[in-house]
Amino acid sequence: MCTHPPADEVRRLDKRFKKLDLDDSGELSVDEFMSLPELQQNPLVQRVIDIFDKDGNGEVDFNEFIEGVLQFSVRGTKEQRLRFAFRIYDMDNDGFISNGELFQVLKTMVGTNVEDVQLQQIVDKTIVSADTDGDGRVSYQEFCAVVGGLDFHKNMIVDV
Image: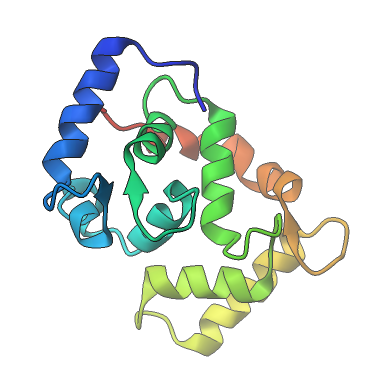
């Protein structure tokens, strides 16, 4: 996690959390997360929640919320954002992006706009291009070598 946030930031996040926690359960469900305008049109919202949800119970408590959201504040680091982006694709949390995982995430993003055969070709080319050690999957280091210099992480900053 980032260094401990200032008390005023924690209070602001607490207010936002409570506003999202429509059923006052102390945890945010997928539906409650979907009330965030930033996430309503995001096809990867379930992956975001899965990553925030450290204990794997299907909902995000306040501590998980703070830790997750602060990655995207100006306090978050490039490394944190790259790790988060990698985890979007590493669905089974084994430290690698497989051909199947990349296909699943891209399919979620493009829906029916790209035929499965075309999408698989894109996935195959991407894996071959990024997989420098030839093991058929993409490690975090290989992922960073491909996307680390693109500065996409700068677009991952939100006002919290």
